[in-house]
Length: 402
Image (cartoon, rainbow, N blue to C red):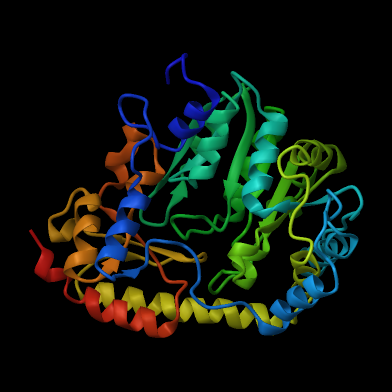
């Protein structure tokens, strides 16, 4: 990265958004979405649901607007939501949080990620993430002028080699970023990985940033927050949001929880980013967090079902699928169709088959793209009818074989 880059260029460079001249280029997300719109394709590239969240929760937001919840909310979030977040963490994970000092509400998980990185990471610090990675991490690491080190997730189950993880974390590491369940691979990390991260954080005196926005979207297993494991809480900032758990991605209501000294840092930076947001949405999210267990179970089961429909169709077409254990996404290997670079196929799919997907190589450092070049990511967080139609269309993949 050029030493002449401005902060915005460092941000864009970190997220692979600059061309070889240092100017902003058209991202593959923009390109594929444009092709999907042009050809009226089913867009399985974008990771947001096409169904609304619970009507009763939406009504609370509408009522809140009518009743005057239209001015600034408290910077840390309304008390009802902070208490609801603390109650949620106790109910599901046995964590006992002080809603006054250990919880902060943010403008989506994205702001929580930004505030946490900017609060604790500075120029020359090192940050370790798993690769492939959610691009927001790389962008914020770039903005902080820190060094982004990666530990590659290895096929077939997208788990890290623990020896390589140990080698990546050093005394120069300021933060380890964990995304579990993991976007974009759909993997869920085992206790061995989580415990190793905790041990390394203590050994090298660094912070764990645990992005758990898909915490309720696991298939056949329960989510384990790293903060619930021995010695994990004291070094961990945990992030989640209403977007994924309740299908309210546009509301942008997220939160960070953890020890007071860490949340104080997040809150301090956050107040100079958005200060506050979503005064009408926050009461609705507070109520959503108290929904009965069967809501969360049924939502996860519904996603597992649409995932299975899509995975079955791809496998019947001869395309190997890495079936996820959580999230909105599944990964398919298109090398058997003759595509060593899945980007080429991604550009053909909207016009030829009427489906859009995203190549996995956009979620990695440029020098590591070869390891993931034949992989495509499909989002299955869509209505069953959409997934059934997409599955039908994708049976024509053999026609695109080289």
